[in-house]
Length: 210
Image (cartoon, rainbow, N blue to C red; front, top):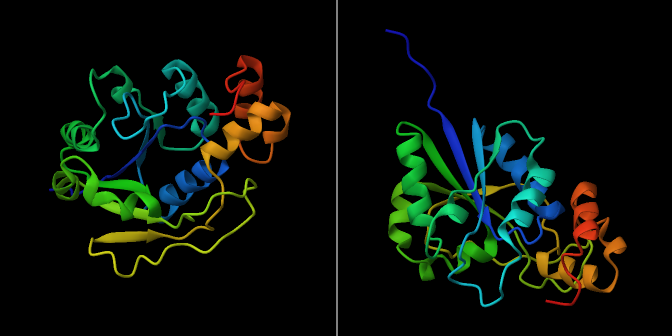
């Protein structure tokens, strides 16, 4: 009987408000290093852990299409936006497991998320359903350019199983993009994909600092 290699499927979730160049590089790295057949980019619906009100879901979905849609194997997935109530990763992974019952699932994270992982709702279930794939991310993100690097947290003492993703750690955050866009939307061209920059300007998404 013919045998087939196990399918590899990744989940990359986040507010993506907006998606920036470090997000793009992380998706590219995960696809290549993990050999993913499919990567679900999943904008958060109702973010239980964020006090800030997110931009409208249609805008965040549209920006994700512009930022990631050309990458092979990527699917922009709106399941958390369609789901009522808070968005919990354990629920999303359970849905992906039902969709890909025989696949190896990976959850794509930044180092800051790994450090707070045990505060997640039902984090034990997340570990049961997926392997963690983690990229370095500086805790100090006061710089705003993607090439401005900083020292990353030491993850050697984190008592959780994870695979390190090998990519440069950029001091670049969505907060920095929003703040820069609030003062001059034309100045974020080195922080987000060009199409995302144009979309932000066209729709005046971040008119004041947030």
